[in-house]
Image 1 (cartoon, rainbow, N blue to C red):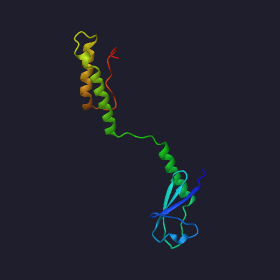
Image 2 (spheres, one colour):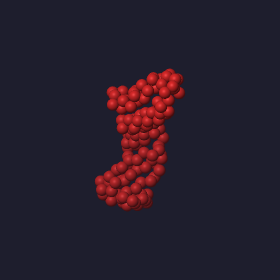
Image 3 (tube, rainbow, N blue to C red):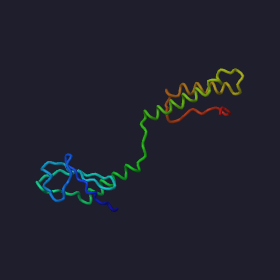
Image 4 (tube, rainbow, N blue to C red):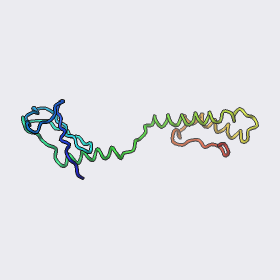
Length: 138
Protein backbone atom coordinates (compact mmCIF):
# COMPACT_ATOMS: atom_id res chain seq x y z
CA UNK A 1 0.00 0.00 0.00
CA UNK A 2 1.66 3.21 -1.16
CA UNK A 3 0.43 6.39 0.45
CA UNK A 4 2.01 9.71 -0.26
CA UNK A 5 1.61 12.73 1.96
CA UNK A 6 -0.10 15.60 0.19
CA UNK A 7 1.87 18.04 2.36
CA UNK A 8 -1.38 19.69 3.30
CA UNK A 9 -1.03 20.16 7.02
CA UNK A 10 -3.36 22.58 8.70
CA UNK A 11 -3.71 23.88 12.23
CA UNK A 12 -6.60 26.11 13.18
CA UNK A 13 -6.87 27.53 9.68
CA UNK A 14 -3.12 28.02 9.21
CA UNK A 15 -1.01 26.32 6.54
CA UNK A 16 2.26 24.55 7.32
CA UNK A 17 5.42 26.32 6.18
CA UNK A 18 8.34 23.89 5.69
CA UNK A 19 10.81 26.74 6.23
CA UNK A 20 9.27 27.68 9.57
CA UNK A 21 8.27 24.62 11.64
CA UNK A 22 7.71 26.84 14.70
CA UNK A 23 4.65 28.14 12.89
CA UNK A 24 2.69 25.62 14.95
CA UNK A 25 2.16 26.44 18.59
CA UNK A 26 1.79 24.14 21.59
CA UNK A 27 -1.75 22.66 21.74
CA UNK A 28 -2.35 23.28 18.02
CA UNK A 29 -4.07 20.31 16.42
CA UNK A 30 -2.50 19.43 13.08
CA UNK A 31 -4.45 17.52 10.48
CA UNK A 32 -2.36 15.35 8.15
CA UNK A 33 -4.26 14.69 4.93
CA UNK A 34 -3.16 11.92 2.56
CA UNK A 35 -3.99 11.43 -1.10
CA UNK A 36 -6.26 8.45 -0.37
CA UNK A 37 -8.49 10.61 1.83
CA UNK A 38 -7.07 9.42 5.15
CA UNK A 39 -6.75 12.10 7.81
CA UNK A 40 -4.84 11.96 11.07
CA UNK A 41 -4.87 14.64 13.74
CA UNK A 42 -1.94 15.25 16.08
CA UNK A 43 -1.59 17.77 18.91
CA UNK A 44 1.63 19.81 19.22
CA UNK A 45 3.00 19.10 22.69
CA UNK A 46 6.40 20.81 22.32
CA UNK A 47 7.10 24.11 20.54
CA UNK A 48 8.62 23.54 17.11
CA UNK A 49 8.26 19.74 17.20
CA UNK A 50 5.87 18.16 14.70
CA UNK A 51 4.97 14.61 15.73
CA UNK A 52 4.40 12.98 12.34
CA UNK A 53 2.02 9.99 12.17
CA UNK A 54 3.60 6.57 12.37
CA UNK A 55 3.26 4.02 9.55
CA UNK A 56 0.83 2.09 11.75
CA UNK A 57 -1.40 5.17 12.25
CA UNK A 58 -1.35 5.88 8.52
CA UNK A 59 -2.31 2.29 7.68
CA UNK A 60 -5.13 2.28 10.25
CA UNK A 61 -6.53 5.57 8.94
CA UNK A 62 -6.26 4.24 5.39
CA UNK A 63 -8.07 1.02 6.28
CA UNK A 64 -10.93 3.05 7.72
CA UNK A 65 -11.18 5.01 4.45
CA UNK A 66 -11.16 1.78 2.41
CA UNK A 67 -13.80 0.20 4.64
CA UNK A 68 -16.08 3.20 4.15
CA UNK A 69 -15.73 2.85 0.37
CA UNK A 70 -16.74 -0.81 0.40
CA UNK A 71 -19.29 -1.00 3.18
CA UNK A 72 -22.83 -1.30 1.84
CA UNK A 73 -25.37 1.13 3.15
CA UNK A 74 -27.56 -0.57 5.70
CA UNK A 75 -31.15 0.58 5.88
CA UNK A 76 -32.72 1.26 9.23
CA UNK A 77 -35.81 -0.62 10.36
CA UNK A 78 -37.83 2.55 9.84
CA UNK A 79 -36.57 2.89 6.25
CA UNK A 80 -37.47 -0.74 5.55
CA UNK A 81 -40.94 -0.22 7.02
CA UNK A 82 -41.47 2.92 4.96
CA UNK A 83 -40.48 1.11 1.75
CA UNK A 84 -42.77 -1.78 2.66
CA UNK A 85 -45.69 0.58 3.24
CA UNK A 86 -45.07 2.27 -0.12
CA UNK A 87 -45.07 -1.13 -1.84
CA UNK A 88 -48.25 -2.15 -0.01
CA UNK A 89 -49.98 1.12 -0.94
CA UNK A 90 -49.04 0.57 -4.58
CA UNK A 91 -50.43 -2.99 -4.50
CA UNK A 92 -53.70 -1.80 -2.97
CA UNK A 93 -53.98 0.97 -5.55
CA UNK A 94 -53.20 -1.47 -8.36
CA UNK A 95 -56.05 -3.77 -7.27
CA UNK A 96 -58.66 -1.06 -6.59
CA UNK A 97 -60.50 -1.58 -9.90
CA UNK A 98 -60.46 -5.36 -9.51
CA UNK A 99 -62.09 -5.08 -6.09
CA UNK A 100 -64.92 -3.02 -7.58
CA UNK A 101 -65.56 -5.33 -10.56
CA UNK A 102 -67.95 -8.09 -9.40
CA UNK A 103 -67.29 -10.45 -12.32
CA UNK A 104 -63.47 -10.09 -12.39
CA UNK A 105 -61.78 -13.51 -12.66
CA UNK A 106 -60.33 -14.75 -9.35
CA UNK A 107 -61.90 -11.76 -7.56
CA UNK A 108 -62.28 -13.55 -4.19
CA UNK A 109 -58.56 -14.38 -4.09
CA UNK A 110 -57.72 -10.77 -4.92
CA UNK A 111 -60.02 -9.49 -2.16
CA UNK A 112 -58.30 -11.87 0.29
CA UNK A 113 -54.93 -10.56 -0.92
CA UNK A 114 -56.04 -6.97 -0.35
CA UNK A 115 -57.07 -7.89 3.21
CA UNK A 116 -53.64 -9.46 3.77
CA UNK A 117 -52.04 -6.23 2.54
CA UNK A 118 -54.10 -4.15 4.97
CA UNK A 119 -53.30 -6.47 7.89
CA UNK A 120 -49.63 -6.94 7.01
CA UNK A 121 -48.14 -3.98 9.00
CA UNK A 122 -49.53 -5.44 12.25
CA UNK A 123 -48.09 -8.93 11.65
CA UNK A 124 -44.81 -10.46 12.78
CA UNK A 125 -43.74 -10.76 9.12
CA UNK A 126 -43.74 -6.99 8.52
CA UNK A 127 -41.67 -5.66 6.75
CA UNK A 128 -39.60 -8.73 5.84
CA UNK A 129 -42.08 -11.13 4.23
CA UNK A 130 -44.52 -9.62 1.75
CA UNK A 131 -47.95 -11.06 1.07
CA UNK A 132 -48.00 -13.04 -2.17
CA UNK A 133 -50.29 -11.89 -4.97
CA UNK A 134 -52.75 -14.45 -6.32
CA UNK A 135 -51.97 -16.18 -9.61
CA UNK A 136 -53.01 -14.20 -12.65
CA UNK A 137 -53.09 -10.79 -10.96
CA UNK A 138 -50.18 -9.32 -12.88
